[in-house]
Amino acid sequence: MLTARTIVLSWLVLGSAGAGVAAEIRDIEVLVDRMDRLYRSETSFTELEMEIRTPHWRRTLRMKMWTEGMRKTFVTILAPKKEAGTATLRVGTQMWNYFPRVDKVIKVPPSMMMGSWMGSDFTNDDLVKESSLAVDYRPAFGTAGSDSVYEIVLIPRDETPSVWGKIVLTIRKSDLIPLSYVYFDERGEPMREMTFSDATDFGGRTLPAVLEMKPLKKQGHRTVIRYLDAQFDRGVPEDTFTHRNLRRRR
Image (cartoon, rainbow, N blue to C red; front, side):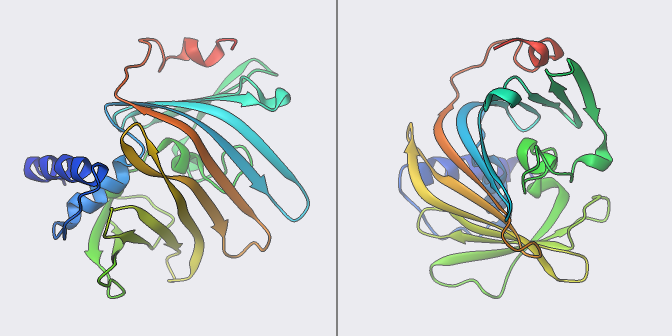
């Protein structure tokens, strides 16, 4: 569990990295907490595209996302037309999807958090961050670290329900930008890899603008998320994280 000291250190690291100043970080909890919060803050608003590719078809979703801390997420799809208005709400450990074509809100049970979101290679949990690397996993520095990168191995805590046996993070030391996450099953087999690229300044915060998720056992499948805009600590409308907002016509 993160201590008050660790949380303070985490925000100091966030600030210094955003200003282009990085030092050797020896507190592993600081690094993991930073990865949890990389695209979040007190509040955030982002516009993004998700391109889903398989050997037989391809489609691109355009959407907007709002977050508040680590506990609230709201996502709405803008395009294509047949999916426009589809929305996802997560508050705490509860999640709902709204499908405008049938005008129905469906609660997502915990057993479905690792299911695909909108047919992509990202899970419901990946998108809305119901789980937390800092809270749900035990971190240790890996042996593949070097002068230029940190390697962090995350093992699920005993009380954490997880399909992953471990997650291995690679983080660039110079600016604390993640390079990759590799997800392993309980037998130690790598099952999927998420890579980060195109570090971009979004209002003073440097983030990878492109995330690519690739299942390693499904040839020709991949999903790419591109951040088009990101704003932090600007405030969000009071009714953003509500069931009423799920059904709202946009």
